[in-house]
Length: 111
Image (cartoon, rainbow, N blue to C red; front, top):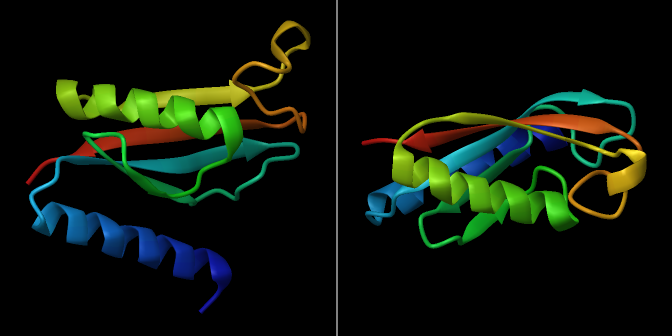
């Protein structure tokens, strides 16, 4: 099993366990990368309605922003597409200081 497929499997097992515990969750998935990106396409982050999370879609400020938006998606029941990159004026805010871009799809899980 490759590292990437193991990570996907692990994140989905966490998601299933959390659903079984009665938690409301969302799954964030890297769906596109461009240039230098910390995590490959297919990487997952599982988030519950309290802001607890497992996995990784990037790191640093990006991960915090994904968790924040995932909690909103859980509350609204609506998926969202997030995009992060670096721009000259926002290089040290939420973005990728490595110069890449990523798109992250955040989908609330309903049972």
